[in-house]
Length: 335
Image (tube, rainbow, N blue to C red; front, side, top):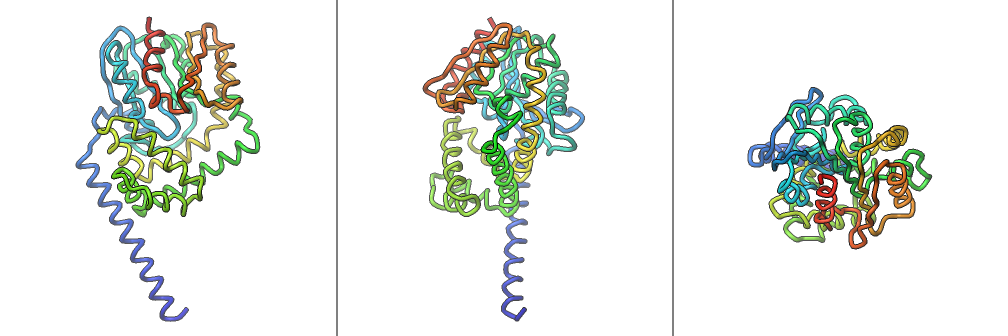
């Protein structure tokens, strides 16, 4: 390699090192300026961040989607806290919680949630509300701890039968999601995600779109734009928290591990869901696919007391589009 080649490599190495150091410095600054707003609870495997609000004779426990945090429940929790004790939290590896240590499977997630509820003295009985991937976790929790659960509200839950034995198309989708999460982790280490999110939150779309397209193609750019649009439905004071979380490489690493565990989790839920006796309301998005809708109908048909409600004017993120519908379903179970 000639002298010019060595100089080029040295410049690239210096740029990468500078980017990594800048990212670390910004992360430390964020930790000082934006500490966890809730409580940090040690559940043994990690410290989990929990936000507790409201009072009432029944508790409502919120379980977020596959790469989401307790912030995704902000609109629903603020309404539900008017009539119930509520708790939302960040799973290990996400939000303000510690990184994942050890296993990332259904048993460990259910165990961590149970430990969290016990160590926060969350009242019983408990209504479990799970969105998307979180629906699998609350179904497994209800099967394992039936005496603690007063009812379930499943918000466009991930289809257990759809993911237990995924089609070739779903396997490809899953592989792509894992790959993009790994790419996102690298870009987050280099500060690229932080810079793109800073611009996106300020209203600039061009550079974030180019970054997403360069790293993951047109599909990645469209996904990024859609997610920024969804996050903007949250109260403005929650935007910074979401931005900080997705600037942290640990969140992409956790997302990849959650995706990797999805088929095994779905199979475990299928095996135990039929034993659930608590009343259940399933909210199905208006644009749910035929396979998703069929799985939602199966859940209701197998439940001892189940009801399906199709939310026609909402996409997958019903917690953002129609938080009033979710809060109403929770109130119905509470009554």
